[in-house]
Length: 266
Image 1 (cartoon, one colour):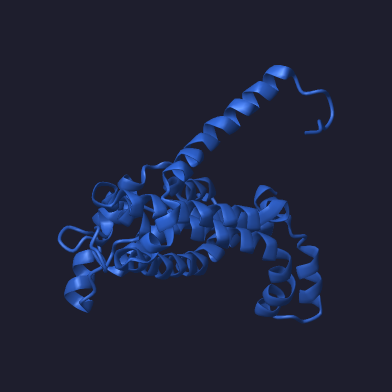
Image 2: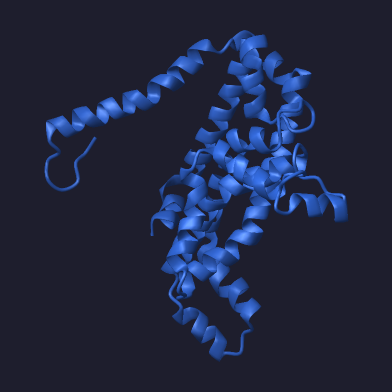
């Protein structure tokens, strides 16, 4: 390990080593408990396959929903000055800091069929019930995942020099043409980073999902919920699915690399 600038003090290096150890030991413990000879069988059993199918469908749908409503929000936060800007940014960050179970309770307060702010209207007028359904899973996952996408896009939009857009406008390009040909290519690193992080967060969501959508096998039971259920009935299956989730998250982080992370930190 090389040092940039002044020599790093020894106590800082020791603290860093302790930090790495603290983070790595749970992963080592997980790998130690995985039954490698039966790993494939555990991942391909019917309950695991169904949970994986629901997780993939819900997490991809939640990421798409987060993109549709998160991109305009990130644009406004990055490019507009308005009175309640700090309040809006606090709302964006809120799902990242509140307990996911609290987020699920809050969603019930809005979309619950009986006492929800909008749930009763949706059910009586349109026949739509979001709680304890796949749509509930998607909404819960989008709620907790969207902040990651918004923050990445906001950082990317702030880093783009608006003179390129102004030049395109002078040349007669429409708003959509400027976005597609000027903004989007320069925003791509931040967009990819935000989408990958949001998808990984949606894939691993637990608390808001079980509170708002329940844990119904074959209907709303995602992979994290299946892990929770299997811990007592099938520990080997729980460790196998846990290993798969960790592997996916590690692959996402490796895939981001420094140049994608740079799009977030700007």
